[in-house]
Amino acid sequence: MTSELTLMEVLVQLLKNNNKSLVTDYEKILTASSIQLLPIDRTILKNAAQFRSTKNIKTPDAIHASTAMRYSCTMFLTNDRGFQTIPGLPSVILDQVIQS
Image 1 (cartoon, helix red, strand yellow):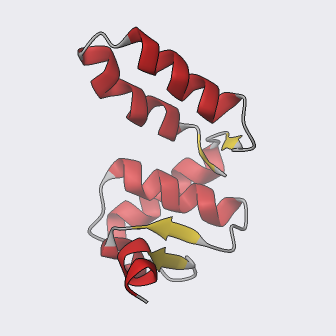
Image 2: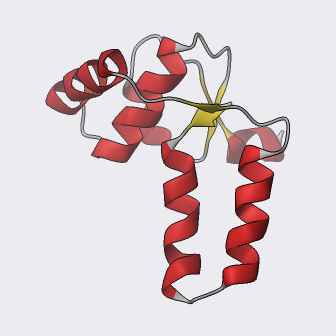
C-alpha cells in the first residue's frame, strides 16, 4: 500500500517528457494491481504537519509517513534514512535489506 501521492510523484517526470505510454503503464500498475492507493485525509495532513514541525522532512515524505501510520502499515520500505527519525514508523531501509 502507498499514499495516493505516489501516483502524482511517479507521473511528473513522465508527463514532462510527454511519455504517454509510460504514464498509462504506471497508472495501470498503481491503480489496477494489488497495490492499494490510500486516500489522504485531514488526519493524515494534520499528522504530516506535526512531523514537518518536529522532524527535518519534506512535505511529501511527511504525508507518506503519516499515511503509513494512519493505515497501520507494518513495514515502511524506503531508501531514505530520514524516515528512521519518525517514532512509531516501522521503516526498513532497502539498501540494508539488499546488503544482508
